[in-house]
Image (tube, rainbow, N blue to C red; front, side, top):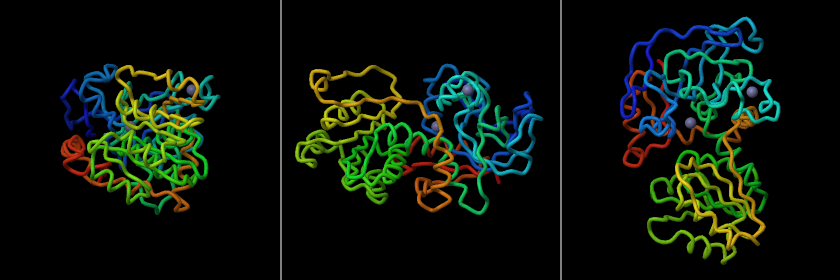
Length: 346
Ligand SMILES: [Zn+2]
Ligand SMILES: [Zn+2]
């Protein structure tokens, strides 16, 4: 079979690899139908994720068809269509029993990280019963690919941790795919205003189409003053950080209203200033989280019922065999006006 293989910082190849085999009785082998590229894959390509070693097949998102199952797999059989969760869970450890699959002692984020991933024609999925989700036929599979990672990430780390309530004023800092997924899932709770903050006018235009009530281009002037002006100097009830930089975190700290929440989603590579001189008396809550994918079943139902349309974030389609071109497009997201790319194993 063919797969996208990492060969150290800046080096990757679409090349022949042995077919994955069942290694444990709880494993399943899945034929990948559709997959995508994540911002995390670009971090890996830069060498920012040193646990990923030469020879690793990348990718942690996708939908497919079960090809083979180990003898302890009870929920799935060959031929079943499945959503592959970016988080693998054994379902039995202390953290899984708390619903914190991200910290599963035998799983967590391992696909395309410490074991071979989904940017391949076939993938081995450990603990298949608790790491795969059945998907219905006849719906747009692009939508389900978005549920492997970005939608549960946006919803759990941003919307749920931010405790958005009806009538709230929400600001989302960063209008990339995860920020936009936060916008779409924030609407479940009917906030009165959702402001998007970004430096890219193209992405802010998409945010407006997807329902942002206000957009702030932080390249054109100080975002903090603009948000404070828009809120009558009150600030926002919920500030969602969807970038992962000291500047964007600083915006969230400055715009959060008394009693508000800062919900972090961004991946940070450096420390930030925590402005306790302002926040000590401000009754705020700051949350951090790695996606657990515990809301995947709920998000699946929202897609099935037509309430949620994650496929609206898909801007480009490629054949899986053209994945090198897809990486090029996704790496130049701003120029290419790319949000999510879907790769199809035709
Ligand atoms: Zn991802
Ligand atoms: Zn576990």
